[in-house]
Image (cartoon, rainbow, N blue to C red; front, side):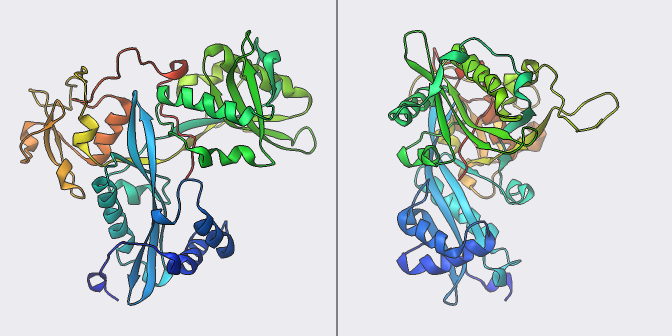
Length: 403
């Protein structure tokens, strides 16, 4: 069946689509069987429900499906409506016809039309989504170290197993930290479901007055000391005292665990906290250099609505012209074939002429635009509100949720 003979129309999924969707997602993502996926769709996902599911049918058969979660991302002191694109799957007998790409483009249009400013996803292949204007955003360093490599920072003795109301305290702490952390999502209750898993343990840090100021969620894998491992699922701290106290508590676990697994954003300079950040048994990757951590690349993000992204209800100062990016009058040029509303010249958050002229300066692709936007370096982008500063001083994009 040639590509040009396949009409691609994304339509909202209904109850009658559940069996076929569950079967398609189980085949495309085998980690969950079809029965479990059908139950998930009916009962609701961690990040959405059946109303977020969309399908493409060709000649009465399910050709593809995806999910468009309604999320909200904190970025430079602003909360931006974000579509979480997930479960993009094409039936095996409909592949190589451009259906997946056209499904994604329609999803971008749906998200923009409903008011989303950004789109985030975890890619099956980065090059596929880069061609659609996405850019890799998340970047964490995964350290594996023996607890004795970490100092027992002061405050470790104020960390305790969370009481019965500990989950509510963790939700409150996350809510206070998220607006000051680039990339964290605004969470609703179901997005904390990982804290209810039997394999997840929650510990709270309390300050000198007994107030909870941070938490760490961990999972352990037992066995002989050399194989036992404690993985940090999430560490949230309101201040430096809580952050160091929770790290110190990890060091104290040396009597039980042989390895700690911790994902740090680059700004933490976590290698400076370890006695010698060499991964044991890693060999010599380059001369006298040593292997400290694995680099993990996370979600990809796309800018859907330039006008709203650059808009501000207050007269906030904006990022100025940058060498190599701007025209002489501070205008940037953007080419966006998938979302033409973004294409054209932009200055101080306002759209100007739509004609692009490479002779006047560089023409940015959507992926280049979002890269600068996430870094806070896009000309015309509003600066953070007065008084805003990143949590713990780490401005890195930190995304903890996986959808």
